[in-house]
Amino acid sequence: CMLPKLCHDPTTKYYGHLVLSLIISKFPIHKKIVIQVFHSLLKAYNADCRGVVFSALEVITPAMPARMDDGKAMLYHWTKKIIVEEGHTVSQLLHILNLIVKQYRV
Image 1 (spheres, helix red, strand yellow):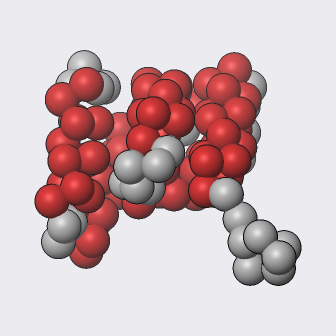
Image 2: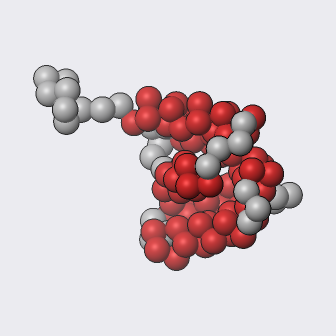
């Protein structure tokens, strides 16, 4: 890219989210940060970074109930909100349904 301000690699962004997910799973982190990372990962359904996003979701989803008092309620709330507001594309719905199927125990 000739213009570094306008060019960014989405894969590096989600590798950062993966690192944050690993940190959240091991250490107590503020509730707002946990929700922001989870919300951003739910909205990421691009094919370019699907593997990294699924890895991060597999780490952060089981950690949310342990790190927050209302973790299960927040999982339900944000998943439902993304399905209702942004679930108009098939790839977005498949992304969220894949999360639900893989993390059904939580």
